[in-house]
Length: 471
Image 1 (cartoon, rainbow, N blue to C red):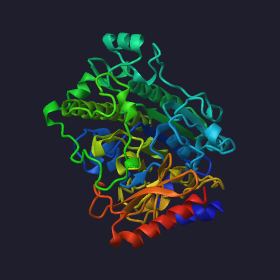
Image 2: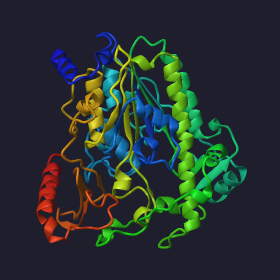
Image 3: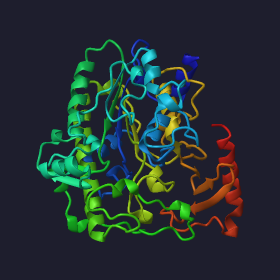
Image 4: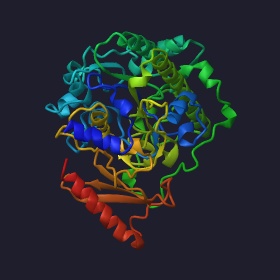
């Protein structure tokens, strides 16, 4: 069966170099970046400066239409790592855990551990480091927090003191410090050391490196803030709810309102504050981009890149004022679409498969894809499908549709349309919105009630309800 599978991969053009020897399958370096929008040079957008991620993208395949299955941290990661779709009973919130919501399911790292891989987690991979922790080869490592700040990681004394007194701090910080004063620099340091140690392993590795930024608060060393001129920051050009959108499409972006200087509901942030937030987000992206560059440089310097598959992805998207929303927690494209870049080892002649894959993929597809690339048998539990054909040929077709969801909202996204339906506990459709991405990629006008779209809406609804039966 494995010989047949490998022959199939060769026939569609994947490099034989991926399967270096029967004794030593390829390594996997799995880099996850929290709350990352596809607002990168590699995605044709120059607002945020991301030279290291862009370089990686130029050496691999960029997935232009990759979707998280749920736009919130814990649930997205648990779904991704088990290859199971979220549902109204499983993987719902930011604190969802795979080892609680899917107790009998294997994780991709647990399964690879069983297959002889050295598996290692550092930084933020599972939302809770204890989630499925025993399935890694060694205990997960997270950068040390101090003063009860958790992920907030302030380094300026005034912010540390304020948080100690009122458990609240600013939504951004710019300190003139070295990169490893903040968590992501520490995570990069640890990953660089772990790669050095991996040289002496007598087994392949699956190394997962999870960077925290650009998650709130937008804290980054001053040098990354200085890459941007505050006067050049551009606000979202659609800071309004879509025409005819149901009330259920609105949320109060409570995640952001927990920070100093952010008005309480229902007041909106001022344009001045919005520019500062966007500035902080971009600075955080550039900061984490530099850490990615450091880790990839170590991979290359150690000679490990020649037999290592690199994944780089967000866990979901993030809104920066579009539709009047901030954070994630919505079914809109800004919350569910996120970067996915995969670089395969080069062929023996030095060539590589590169390009942009426009076909749809979703994050339940990552587990089966990793199994294909590492020559492992597939598992019956997996509810996604491998996108290895697009890695062989970025022009290959993607999926007919992908299926994000959030709370009671179920979503189907095809190449041309996005339909969201809100369901009652009894399974009745309470509200819906449909966007025609051929003419309205920004999702500004809900056409669900337009008679000319009835046939399209009915078809998407039927596909959605059929998928819901399979979870």
